Every structure is written in structure tokens, then in C-alpha cells.
Image (cartoon, rainbow, N blue to C red; front, top):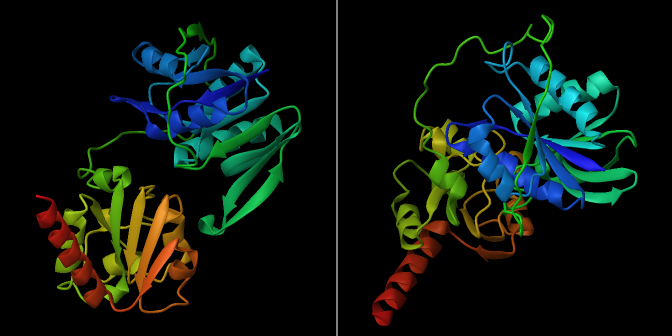
Length: 323
């Protein structure tokens, strides 16, 4: 048996969502194969570090730009060539789209945003639903299990023993229907300023409880003292208090810091979808019944404008005493 992972990559290498997916796939205890569309040579070293045994490569006419139908055709060809009984992709818009096409072509079920495998014969996965506020256990087909892996379901970790992947070129030419939907052109957008937030080990969150656009000084000071990044709720960006790249949630960044300190954030489902992977959550809120407080590992009940300055002062005091 083998497991096939659809790889997403760019000029810098394999995307984080794909290294997370390969790491997740290794927990299945089967050989790991990969599907790469485009230039494979630059990725072989990294694929070997993550324990991939075989790489199935699709290139040539029809694969120059992203087309979900063409990628799905390549995935089906790789399944047939490898004998894979499971195919995974990252739970990104592209990964979910490709797997949906694969499932339709093979007439099997697909599960999106899985966070763990509950059973292997037949495959059952627990997947995020309702914006990550609940888990649903879903049984998949015996012949081919198709599911995407939710972002930050696991941390990307190289394999204990690296491999030297073999490469097998797929002889496939996309049909006109495969290319009916495709990327016609790409244009450079504004720089993605959310990178530090997504990778931060400490995130200080701010919600409507901050009060106004002029009330972030102490929150920014706490962020600096902890060496972290500032994240905000959707309402804060909607009100124009902070820029969108700081938004955490279903329509913002998904974070997985070691420590998340949401201040004045009620914890709506959409926000929880972006921060539920945090290892430790310390909520500061005046409402003891707020969803964020009830879900947090620790909580301080009170006015953030009194609590945050007190925390900052204590950190400064201890830092000075340690010098």
C-alpha cells in the first residue's frame, strides 16, 4: 500500500501546507509517494528529507499554468501508476479543489480539512466543521480514501531517515475539458505582510474590547515585550482600526503559536477557526461567559485596559531585576 500526496510549491520550495501534509501522511504507516506538477528537480532534496519514496511528475503542454482539471487528471494517473489507496493534499483552496475533482472522477467520497485518522480499515477521519468549532468523523471508501489535511493539523517535521526519491514521468496530456478552467495570467499583488503573524510563537490578539483605533499602545507594548506579533478580530479590521493583514480568523490568517493572548475578543466561530491550533490560550476579557474565555486554557476576567498595562509593568520589572 502507498499514500499519494499532492504537492504545492513555489519558487522558494515546497509550501508549508504540503510539508504538513507529508508529515501527517507518515502517520498512516505506509510508503509516501508524491505528485509534482511542473519542475520536480528543485524539490527532490526537500521531498527526500520528508521521507518520500517515489515522485510522479507531470509536465509539458497543459501544465504550464494551474488548471484544476489538469492537476486532477495527473493525480488520477499517479494513483493508477502507484497503486495508491489514499490520496491527500493540504487543506488549501487549491488542494481542496484538486481533490474534489479527483473524487468526482473516481466516484468516491472526499473529506475536507481532516485533523486526525480515527481508523485505517476502512479509513475514518475526524475533520473540522462549522469553522473548526466541532469535529465530524467521516468514513471513506475502501478502494480510494480522498481527504485534505487541515492547516496546522500537525507541525511539519522531516523524516527520521531521509530518502532518495525515484522520479517517474507521467505520460498524460490534458484534454480541452481539463483546461476549460485555468489560470490565464498572474499579477504581482501587494506584499503579504501576514507572514510574521502566521509563524509567530507568541500572538497578542485584540478585539472590539480595545475600544478605538487609538487604544492599541499597551497591546503593542505587550507584543514587543513578548517578542510576538499582533493579531486582531474581523470587527477590528471592519471598523478600520487595524489593517487586514493582522486579522486572525476564517477570512484572515490561521495561526498556531505556542501562546495566544486574545484581549477583548469574544471568540466567534470565525475567529476560533483561525486560532484553535494555538498550544496555549490566555484570554483577557470582562465577560466570564465569552466563548473565548470558556475555550481558553487560562483566563483573566477584567478590563484589558487595566490588566494589560499591569502585565507590561510586571514584565518590565522582572526584566530589569534580572539584569
